[in-house]
Length: 128
Image (cartoon, rainbow, N blue to C red; front, side):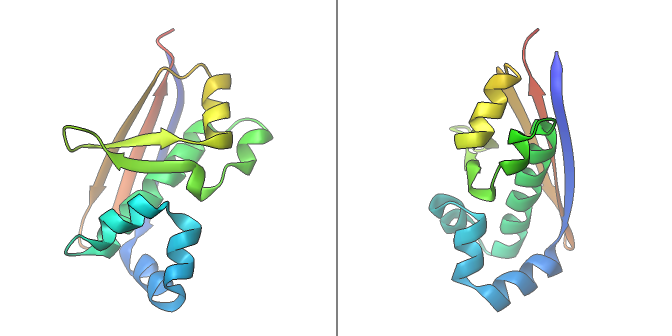
């Protein structure tokens, strides 16, 4: 049974402006070290950073519904490459606790990006 669904779109130019103006401070605030290292190693890092922001926002929306969920931070949702190369999510702290409240047994993530926009959809399932 689907217990959470989230969708988000992020403007690449906005991410570029943010990173260009705040630099490492923004990277440390929004991403775990492996996430920013992955994105910065790519030919167009802003595209990959924006996709990760979209995935985190979509996850936040999918986990919404309780007071505790409002306290989920950027670094409590991590986008990592699965063994087969597709992106997947690892939840930490409050995000992990909220997923346990919802009895989440599977998280599905789809990320896409164009020249101007990155988007992500997250579905939380509890096999119920």
